[in-house]
Length: 395
Image 1 (tube, rainbow, N blue to C red):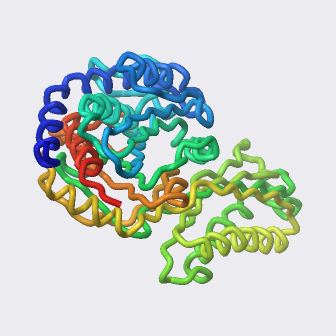
Image 2: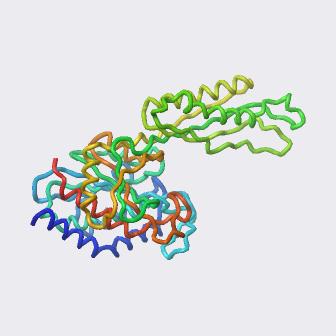
Image 3: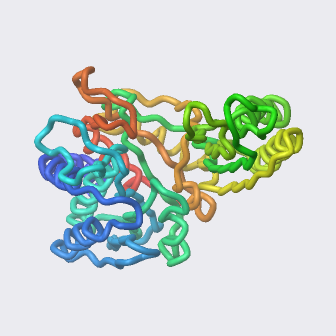
């Protein structure tokens, strides 16, 4: 059987199992689990493989699950990754498959990633006698919350012997049938920081006797804007955002303390170091001016996703030849973070987006929104691209 004939047969089988993909995705959507708490989801994944007699490893780096398909022919070892954790968001959709867990939902498409990979694995396993090499299916827990699941899974051997890795993300802002790729810098390193300002409270009528934490915090927020504008090389994309400012008090009381929280995103390690250092310099300077004290915590999140050129070009070309793909285009760099970055630090590979915009424009909401949903027809598109990548890859 030629590769093209095998590819056609696998596409047909994926179409035949579309309803199964939908059923799995909706089951997971109704039963979401937060990062590092995904025991039932991991068990569901492992049980699915067990019924197919596909060998697995469970509790990989935590709740991670690995499955293995050995082709009958010699060839490379290819890893495919899907994440499966949910978010602390209340599902506000009016659909039959709405989350059954208050305050927890799949608001980023990880349920779709899992359904896609499970059914793809099933079909590839059916045709293992015609496959080259080995396929490692990485079902990763805890993508949404640093330190994430990728790093401990790698430390537990999920990439042992792997020659190349591919991963995709269902992307609700692009139409179904679209594949977006990007070589090099694709998604930013995402860090978070916390600043606690300690001043001196007092009566609103006597500000001269206080060290106003609200005023101090406000000046810190304003001056943080110069960190990227004047300290980071303008060639390097970066952004510092203060997302929280808490100094609750009575209307006539000047606050004695304030807490500021935010994120810092960049692509280059040099910019990352500068931002971490310069945020504290701003805080230190403003607090010194007001004779206030502070504590500063900077927590590094995931590194930047840096796609390898050759695998990225390969996916772009493969996608153009894949049934169901209507457009292949270069993606814009994204300031959001992804711990797929860790895999790319160890083996060649690429991470790409598969368009999953709902057909009804009234159902289109951004990722992490309480009404987020995906076009389920994007799942077989993603599966077909990954299948084509597996079948045609040559070291």
